[in-house]
Image 1 (cartoon, rainbow, N blue to C red):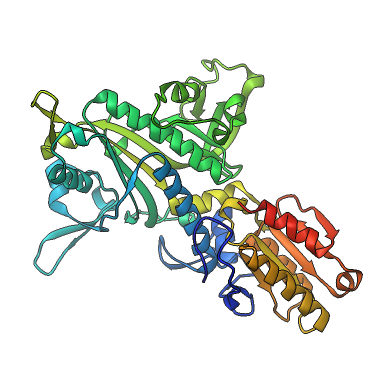
Image 2 (spheres, helix red, strand yellow; image 1 turned 120 degrees about the horizontal axis):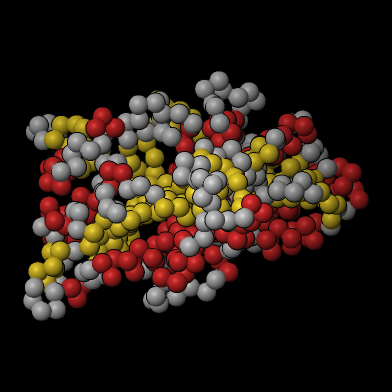
Length: 457
């Protein structure tokens, strides 16, 4: 399938499977009755996913490419913040959860099983207990702190009523990171690093994310923020100062070794509240500076102190030889949920409108007259030059009506469309369409290629 990493550039190979005549893309003309929200409808219609059972989905080639792009952005931002990637199993021993007293906190949402030796196991919905066990077996001294370990792994929660496609399903891909520090001061530094890293992560995906103070729920602790991305079809009402929406975290110079408290405070001191907590009578922001919008929660960070270290006896030796309980935090991003959230935030009546950074392909080539010698030669030349430049491209070489080809290209939402037709070939130009704006221009082939190549992240 070619490269599934973040970059829309890849090694110069012309993979024949990137032709629609061979690509597995089972699109649907009609919307399935069970799809209630935009992202679920479009993911099914665009051939990105198929339901295996309630709340459980198979990811098909197009959807899987987007999932891997998002995963790679998350990975790169975690690595840039000084985190180290590991991989923990999906199946965990129940004894760890009993040790922390969390065994019953999730109730029937936790899938519990027994192996052939009658040992109690569970399909982990989160990993605080397991990572604390790994840490206590491996780290003894304060000199080995701080540490922040993360993995990207499939989770399972037995939702009583899974719905909305990948937005509220049973099996989902999640990035969860866990920090370990000797004291509250160090833990707060780790928390601030993740706070800033999350803002940068979402911005790279073309999303506007607003941090909100949040409840800690079954994770525990007394400090938490959730990150809500703005989308007109979002599930949550959001009230926020206009200035928060105008900031771009990518434009701010960040040194993760420095004190990030002023950066975090510059976000949290601004007004932002969900509709559940917003009180118009007490809101300190003038009406002309307050934005009312909808949003989707896509990540949450927690500081939980010694909540896991205490029951699990997770200590390090301090500078004076004393035993000190570690202070912990956990930081989650819903990777698969983000696919749906991005679609909710970026779509139109025709289909998905992918931001460049997460698009499954940078461009699509539409040959309006497959089998015509001149059109085939022109389309093949564009395909060759784009792939040689390392641009990921999907070539519609099928013998189909033009209307079908245009509709499917709009549905799957690739950032650029290159249209090759008999009249254009004769006149020496192609049509270049920018999916996000709908703008169409007739350009010389080399000029169109340059625009696409220059735009690729």
